[in-house]
Image (cartoon, rainbow, N blue to C red; front, side, top):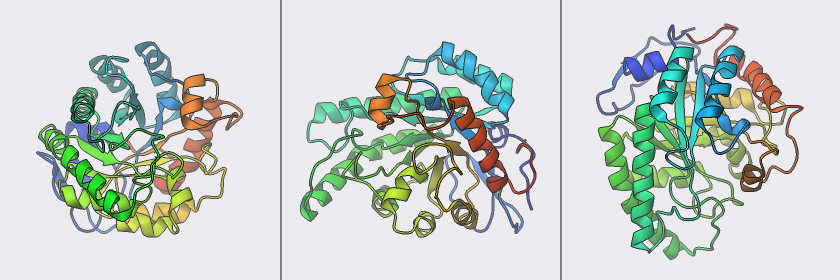
Amino acid sequence: MILLTTSWDLTYCRTNTIFIRGSPLPPLGGRQLKQAPSVDHVVNPIGVSTWVWTSPLSDVDLDRLVPLIHGWGFDIIELPIEQPGDWDPARAADLVAEAGLGTTTCAVMTPDRDLTTTDLVVTKTTQAYLRQCIDIAEMAGSPVVAGPVYAPVGRLWQLDPDERRTTVARLIEGLRPIVEYAERRDVRLALEPLNRFETSLINTVEQAMDVVSSVDSPALGVCLDTFHMNIEEKDPVAAVRMAAGHIAHVQACGTDRGTPGADQFAWHRFADALAECSYVGPVCIESFTAHNAAIALAASVWRPLARTQDALAVDGLAFLRPLFQGDTGGRAR
């Protein structure tokens, strides 16, 4: 058993050191990767997205949520970047550091953000947005920007094999300068496959790996989201193993978009596969509230997914902590 003795922000953001199991991963920018001794379990920090409660995120929301999230025992707060300027990243960094939390961030692909389009103006504005996300992540102390950083959520279109090859090639071309920008700032993009009802381009880890392998940079990896994997992957464990060495972020929720553990997902096999792949990053609960009309529509959340949103987070943490942090019952810090 190995335990990280300090919090995610201390081990990653401040010392720029990651402890891994098995073969060392390629270094990202100036970060140093240290190989730990052979171990039976890897400790993953557990986080939660502010989308569980609100959208769009604001400084007022952070004032309210950071003490709660820290008090419940989370290690990470995940901060969506819907529109740059919604919240102050420098202020957020101070707030979460004072609470002893780490941060992750995620990009939001609205209808006007698209790297697969032939419209060069849209491509350039999308690239500008993603650069802003990287800058915000750096200021907020987040090592990652996760999300479907390729096309708007909800954009569905049929592609024959030739059209798919052309579209993916266009995406790769549009991503390269953004990934290079991210690498210079020691931030990693985590490309997220979505289910077939939210995109028709990248639904599986295999499709995501086609892009990641083509770009071939340590600053681009895959985001594994259990909700989408449950729908699209014939074998989620095999999908995890396919992404070994390239897993940049993990998001967790129940198969109904609700509480992790109160569902049918093969959580223990999933956790074992992540450990086999030496993934030591956060596992962040990502769910949404039906009480916010905009987010309910975007995420197709038509009913409450738990007795309260607080309960969704707390019960999810109670399930995930022993699963991803062994039988310690304590924090990773």
